[in-house]
Length: 333
Ligand code: RIB
Ligand code: CA
Image 1 (cartoon, rainbow, N blue to C red):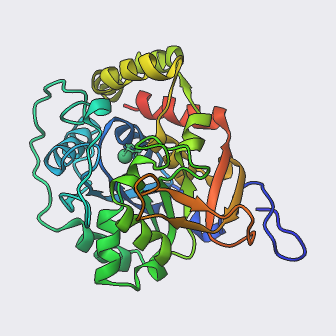
Image 2 (cartoon, helix red, strand yellow):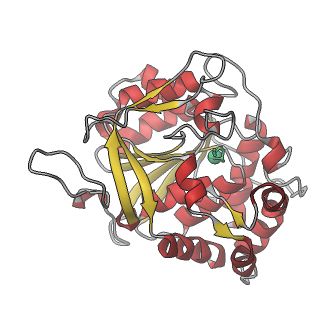
Image 3 (tube, rainbow, N blue to C red):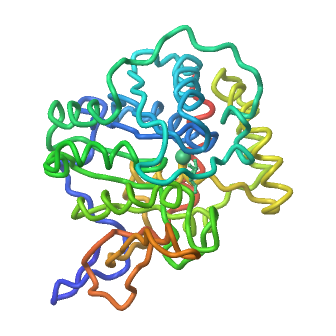
């Protein structure tokens, strides 16, 4: 990120310290908290396909659909991708305080397009997601890349158990929020934050630095349906499985959002895996609203500043780079 003499941060590429980038020889340990969910699945395939990152675990949240489904979907995706080496840690079965509607309308009742897949052979770990997050933060202290693609319930619980967690996390990338109030769960709230605003408040107040890919950035980086269909034609088990599980949500999207499909978690994963693809970002204070009939779950950004404080909000990502990461993830053998 370019900076001014007074230290204020100007819009520009995100600056990530050298130690935070990996190589095939020394991959960055990557822990993903996720509520699979069709767009989560695409993000996971991108992570599985990056030799510079080693996925050390999937901590599973309830969100898009209930926890039993999100756990089952994570196990199945690992099996399809030949990644049964990745442990799957079930997390909290609901938000910290208030219940919330799921997103089955978008993802299908089972979260994976209701295709009736045969369950994975493997069982999930018996370790709770919050405890796994803490344990892995110690095992990979100072290098861990933590990516949150669902409601932040597990991460908030981990923080309540051990408030020193942020000191051991090299980077936290969050898919969530709507930085100028264009929500998808409600007029003001994006789903991951709106599903559990109390958890989001805990997380955003605990981490000094968060890299954010919000819903509005997602809408600005749509994937043309025709191009997605080409990528899904790849001769690979991953592409074939993904074509099946995504059919329902892609059709849902055509009916409601026109000729581009929006994959929020995939964009957040591009930010996480290749931050040098960020074309523009700004840093501003951000607060999560937990009260209010109309604004609960809103991510209220103070655009007045002070600049250089708060959350790193990604405003623009290299679209070609993003699409090549998605295409390669689907084509991977
Ligand atoms: O608002 C989009 C987010 O909500 C994505 O993470 C999607 O998977 C849902 O969880
Ligand atoms: Ca998600």
